[in-house]
Length: 212
Length: 427
Image (tube, chains in turn orange, brown):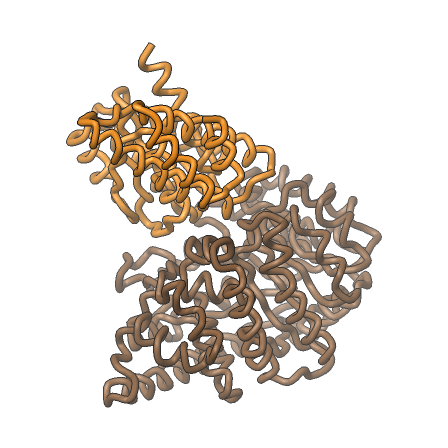
C-alpha cells in the first residue's frame, strides 16, 4: 500500500494506476486502496502548505485519486458491497462568481477520500444552498469563490442558512484565492482555506470528531 | 480624519484642473524615470478602480460595459480626478481578456491590437463562450467574468502546431464563438462585419474617455501574452492546460513555440515610439505551476517575448498574478531595465520581490487591496513604513495588488493612501 501512496504523491499517473489495479486483483478488500488515497491526500496537503506543491500538482493529484478511487469502487461493486460514505458535502461557487477550478479540485479529492458530494455548480444564490441543506442534510457545506465580491456572497449565504435555522446542523468551510481569517470571521464560517488539499484535511478531521 | 485634512491630495487635484498639461507631463516623466530605474521627484502611484470606482460613481458594471455614453465618460473622469494616480489603467469598455482574437488576426496589424480585449458589444455579436457579461448572462451589478472553457481536444495539438492561424479560424472560433456560425457562410461573413463595427465603436469610446481625462498622460501601449496562457485561457481551460503539460509535454512546447511568433507579430503591430511604448502582458498560469514546470513550459517563452520586444525598443509592463514569489529569481535573467513588473500578492513583498529585483527591474506593487479596509491612519502608517524601506532606491511604483478595489473599502482610506504617497514618496 505504501507503494501506491508514494506513486500518487509522486504524481506518477501510470504507476499509480498499475499498482492500484495490481492490488485490486490481489486483495479481497478494496478498502486498502481507498485508505491509500486518503493517506496520499494528507501528504499532498502538507506538501502544498509547505510550498512544495502547486495548483498544477493538486489538479493532477485530483485526477489520479479520482481514477484510482473509481477502480476501487468498481471492485467493491463487483463484490456486492457499497463503499462506505464517510460524510456528505454540499458545495458550490457562491453567487456572483463563476470560477470553478478550485471547487472542482476539492470535489475530485473529496469524492476520492469517500465523501458523497453534491455539486451545486457556480453562481449559486443563498436560497439554493438553503434548499440543498434541507434536501440532502449534508455534514458540511463548502463555499468557493475567487473574486472579492464572493466574500459578501458567502456572508449572505451563511446568514440565510442561519435564518433558516440550519446553521447548527452543518459545518461550513469557505475557500478561494482571496479568503483569509478576517474573511472567515466576517462571513461566519467554521474554517477557511486557500488550498483544496488542506480543505480536505479539515473536513476529514470534522468527520472524525463527529463519529466519536 | 476628514477629507479636508488630505491637504496634499486636495492641492494635487486642484492642479489637475488648473494646469492639466503640466500635471500630465510630470506623471509621464515619473513613469519614464522609473522605467530607467532612476528616482523621479516622487514615487509614482497606480490609481485605484474596479468595484470601488463604480460604488463611488453610482454606475453599474452594465453601464461600464454597454452604456457607451456621456454618463459613463463623466463618471470615469470624475473618479479619476477625485482619486488620481500617476499611472492609471483605463481600458473602458474593454474589460476582459481576448488575446486569442488578436492572435487569430495577427496578420492584420491595423486592428489586431483593437481586438486584444473582449467587450460587451463584441460579446453580443460573437456570442463567445469565453466570457459572461452584466445585463446578459450576469446581473447588471456583476463584474464581467472570464470563464474560458475547453475548445480543443489534446489530440488536436498537431493541427494547432501545423498551422495555428488556420486552426484558430477553422476550429477554435467556430466552437468558442457560436455567433459566427460556420466558416465561409453568409452568417460568418456578416458576423465578422458586425464584429468590426462593434470594435470600432468601443475603440472610439475608449479614446473619448481618455481625451476627457484631465491631467493624465497617455503613451502607446501594445499587447502580448504567454503561449501557455493562450492555451489555458482560450483553448483548453487552465485545468486542461496544466494536465497537458504533464501528459503531452512535447506537444505543449511545440504549440508554445508557434504561438510565440504570432504574439510578437501582434505586439509589434504598434511600433515603438520614443520616449515610451510599453507592451502589456498579464500572467495567469504562473503561480499555479511548480518551479520545475514554470521553468520548462512557461518562462522560456515569456522570456523570449520580453527579450525580443525590449531589443526592438519597447518597455515591458507585466502583471505577475497571484503569488509569484517562487519564480521571482528568473526575472533577473532579463536585461536590466527591461520594464515594470507588477506583483499581485507575493508573500513578503519587500524581502521576496523588492530586495531581489531593485536596481534591475522596475517594481510595482506593495499594497494589498485589503489594506483599504483599515482606518486612514493605519493606511498612512503602512505607506510611510513601506516607502521608507524602498527609498532612496528608484525604479519603484506603489500599487495595490490589483487596481480593482472592492466596493465597500473605506473611501477615506483610499484618499489617505494617495495623500500619504504624496507626503512620504518625495525623494
